Each structure stands twice: as C-alpha cells, then as structure tokens.
Image 1 (cartoon, rainbow, N blue to C red):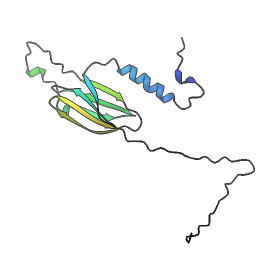
Image 2 (cartoon, rainbow, N blue to C red; image 1 turned 90 degrees about the vertical axis):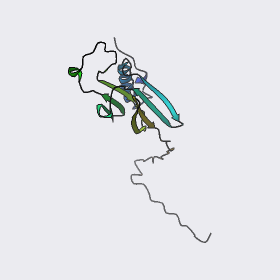
Image 3 (cartoon, helix red, strand yellow; image 1 turned 30 degrees about the vertical axis):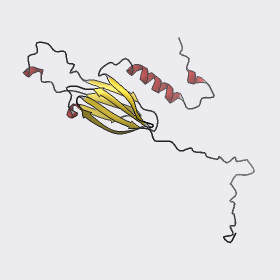
Image 4 (cartoon, rainbow, N blue to C red; image 1 turned 180 degrees about the vertical axis):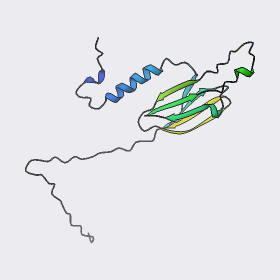
Length: 153
C-alpha cells in the first residue's frame, strides 16, 4: 500500500524535510525512559527536564545533531561490587531525542537533585522581504539607476 503524504501537493515545495522530521518523531515517541517534562519558562524560552536519578554529569551527554537535541546517559557498571536484594532503581543506558524547530538554540544544561535541565530559546525572527528582479530576453543586464541627491533640500 502506498502512503499518501499531506506534503505531496505541488503547492508545497520544499517541505519534504518536514515529513522526515515527523517520521523521526513517531519513532522516538514510544520511548518511555527516562521520564521528562517540557515547560515554557518565558515567551520564547523552553526547558526540558529529565529525571536522571543516579546519573552524574560524567554519565550524561547533551548534543545537537541535525536539528535534533540528543541526550544520552550511560552509568558505570559497579554491580560486581554490590549485592542487591532488590533492584528497583533503573540504571540502564538511554538515548532521548527531541526534534528542534529551525532556529531554536540550546542555551545550557545543568543537573540539580537528580534532574537534568536543558534550556532552549527561540530567537524572535525578523521579517524579511526580498524583491526579485524579473529579467526579459531584451533586458539581459539590469540597468543601473543613479539618483541625484541635493543635500540642501
């Protein structure tokens, strides 16, 4: 069966990357560990908080790879030195990914009381208008226009 994409319209040019992003989001949506929160901390600021109890800052890595925030955790295996009667605290490695919109910047990360906070900011885009010159066969080179300015007016 062929999958019909909403982005297959001839009026939506250059949006095929959005479809790939949506596919990535669907693949990572099933991940459940570690639990996380996403909160808005300002008009243009977000904070992702992951519960990483038992992980130190040396066990964690935060990077941005192709507009994707990737957080990895891997603890040192010290189970040979311990005898567990019950082991209910998860200590497995993980990779948690978040797809970032164009322009979102990671401002920093810190670990406090077993919670990893990653702060993000979306800079306010400035409106941009660009005029495109239309060329014709008779007008191959654009004519340069000069404007005389009288500084005494």
